[in-house]
Image: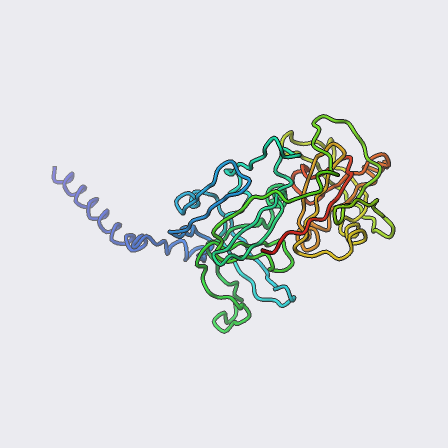
Length: 361
């Protein structure tokens, strides 16, 4: 009996001692043991979503969405590091953000198309982010939803400057060191920070005005080809010129559709005219307020922003296809967006392209 009592007494003392030793490791909800082993930074662990954030989504959507911190905090986040330069080409710093990719947010937003619209899908919509002070930043719906997953356009709620390992306390090359006070729109693919926007409070879906008396209405299932491409400028159409437009080739292209999955039997090679060069040759000067609406002979549509075409790496991989797997496509013109994850913005039987300049108001 004495031996049993001695055993339990020793066991109890051992448990109390162990608790005293490890309790400080878990005090105040911190995990110093993790920091000691992994040197984890604040961006390596979960950052709580701030309170009192609201975001309204309106316009060409089925409902007006009023999103608060409680809802936004349930969405998945990513860590994104950016190297930033302003519109004058001056480097303004490097930063790490915790952010919600916009395409994650849009999974729960339903665009609205009516029976009077010539196209029944959202790929011809313009998305406008609006700040607390009324500033705006514009995108095509497709560049936010059909793109690949690297460096997505995102709404950030936490930011830290990227610092060098040597003498970080003396580093002064990050110009913006203030913490975020709301949602910040970041565009890591863009060459410059023109479309970055502080304190975003709303997002508008809109359908731009186009030359619908010239452009065909969507005819589902229509079989057609196009060997001529017209461009529309000032409400008038002109036959496009390919004179002097650069030819580019891409390989290892695997086509996958958003609705029906993989289309390629094997990786494909395509050759065609550079879209950047084509637009410049036919439309002349272009700028950040311009969008380009592409329409097929069957009425299928896709709209693109000037910024995504001319100021992103992916924009350099957009072509008008003339050869697929070495075979010419003389009887058809196809818009190929090689850098997208999904091919839903590609257009077979491409017949028209219209430049649309949005209002700065």
